[in-house]
Amino acid sequence: MTDPIVPPKPTASELEMLRLLWQLGPATARQVHEGALATRPEMQYATVLRLLQVMHTKGLLTRDERQRAHVYAPAQAQDSLQTSLIKELIHKAFSGSGKDLVLAALRAHVTEKEREEIQAILDREK
Image 1: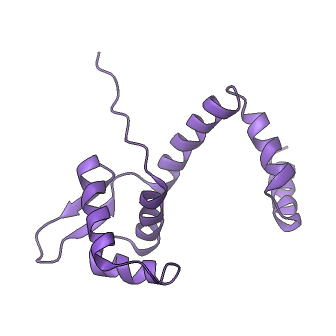
Image 2 (image 1 turned 90 degrees about the vertical axis):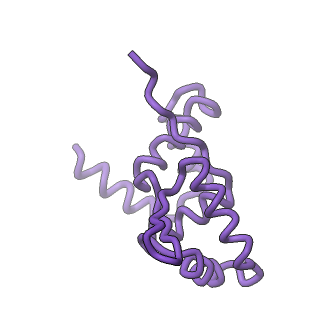
Image 3 (image 1 turned 180 degrees about the vertical axis):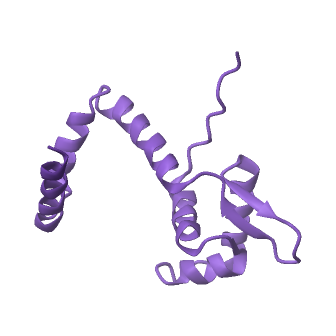
């Protein structure tokens, strides 16, 4: 039996590109660059293109080369990658305790509105 292939862990810049592609859907480097400019006006097209190429090499993106402008897409669904990253974070930073992760998030990183939404979800699950 072979070990399952573990996708590479994206860097912060790679996660930024993945978030854009999850929003845009499959896109060319130019489209990704235009999306990145909304939050990072200093971002150069060449930087985006190089990052997309590296991400493709690492297996984080697929690339459709049938058109002159290659079309990039995430190789993994957003929820799948997020779940994998959360599992790693829980293991490394919270000794395997999901409860400790949630409590840490609730203490410092959740607005009152988000708390209400969380409580509504918990109430529905009862």
